[in-house]
Image (tube, rainbow, N blue to C red):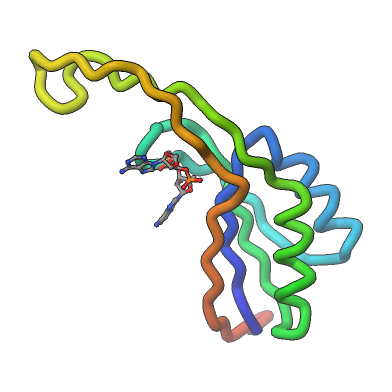
Length: 106
Ligand code: 2BA
């Protein structure tokens, strides 16, 4: 058993949820916040047998897109007197971690 942890943009979460349902891939969706942008994102926790990992990754790949967002650190991001200019940051498609899992249903 593998546990896929996929951090995706909120804009992709509904399409990804539908696609995982269609593929009958069980999952849990968590509301999360990225440490760099401090913006909401969504973390999917997907438990799959090893032989379905590639299928699950393909579904994620097909439904999560790369986007540019404007990062506005502003005053005080590094030092109270410092102003850091806004900059475009590329986010996504998805940040993936895959870990070995031992699944029990109690
Ligand atoms: P955030 O931490 O809000 O990061 C959003 C985007 O900002 C990142 O997109 C990356 O392009 C950029 N970024 C992050 N840290 C940066 C830094 N120190 N300097 C310059 N740019 C930086 P993604 O790489 O696609 O990451 C999207 C989200 O995935 C992240 O949101 C975070 O929630 C999660 N994530 C990424 N790497 C992670 C990691 N190693 N561990 C846990 N979560 C991670």
